[in-house]
Image (cartoon, rainbow, N blue to C red; front, top):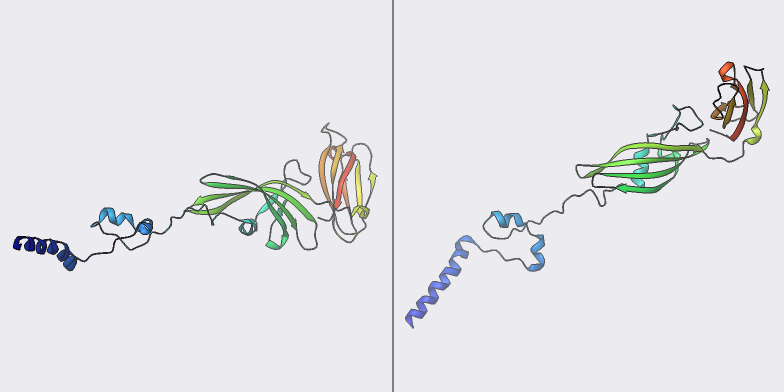
Amino acid sequence: MATLIKFLYISLAVIVLPCIFLGCEKKSSATEWHQLDMNQMANGDGTFSTRFLKPPKTGTNSSKPDLARLKNDIVGQKIKEQPDGYRPKEWHYWIGSLSVIKDLQILSTRENDSSIVMGIQIRLQDSGQGEYLARAEVTYILQNNEWRFSFLESKEISIVETGRYNSCITHIKEGWSGEFSFVFTNRCSVEIEIGGVVLPEFGNTGWRKFALRVPPNGTARLGGLAWWSVQDFRIHYIEQP
């Protein structure tokens, strides 16, 4: 009997004394296991840490660019005329503020681990001026776990046809072979842009696109001497630019 009592005292001492001098921590339940820092378990004294793990940043959830952010990111960008457009290749529409973006739609999205490419359609109109419809691609890249605007690539831009300015313009043909031209007269109090195709008298180039601006209540000439001599033209639109 004395031997049994002695054995129980020794067993109790083995269990209790380490807790008195070293301290014991409450073990985590199975439902808390995934919230504990497993690195300290592997590297420490076998006890659980009470510091919770922070979810890793992925840059692929709420940080993805949405429509509101896309609008802000394209402000300050330029939509350039394309080689097959009506206007000179250096012409562009500058998106100077949010107010000129009348509508923005995401037409397509291509995505991988490091980039997102959005195909967009934009309706643009500055106060008191003509309306344009443009297509472009906007690229975002993943840097430091954040999606960042990279660049905008212009695809197409065209003026929105309304037909309300068609009666503003008249024209006459002037000159003779080698220097034919057409003079357009604007009878309205706003600037007018005429877009269409022209057939040069020389060069065998066929029909070519053109855009001509005519000032308010003013005139503008299409064609001229030698290679600029115009045989004929066709109007595609007459609008306020």
